[in-house]
Image (cartoon, rainbow, N blue to C red; front, side, top):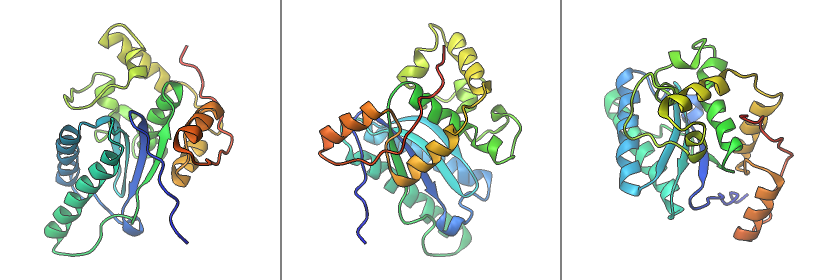
Length: 230
């Protein structure tokens, strides 16, 4: 059966999940994580993509990437970064073969509260996995930088995050509050299913707009509206 064509939109955030082959370990040491982030930074700058969120787990990664005007840059940045990681791990471990699953998962995200809900889903991943009790304790995600614990000069701030406050401090505090709020029932499962299926994360209207723009019939399985930030 042929693969379903991937939906990629210009100037739109995309939730990306890439897993290790057969869920094998991808990052075995701190140096492995740092190498991945260095390459992500290099290719994000080279291709003029925006990276809004990242979370590196032992056997998979979560990213939110905006490819900018050139939609092909989404596949290109993933190819370059994952390819380098494969060669690096193979050299370190004296092995050969693939490191990743054959195809990363992606879902275009409607801007605003849907994007923020995906940020929360990603940055709370280590908490759901019971690795840490609080997201700020996990050093390999974007959360610590978005709440002012550390600085990262190459991480981009999505427009909705910027609108949370007039000052850096105000944005950080409001984002902390948002992350501590109760997650609406079913929100995490909806996000997980949507990205696994390569569907859109957004409202019915967003789905319809993208269908018209792309000329493709896009299946929709009822996604609720994320809880308001207000």
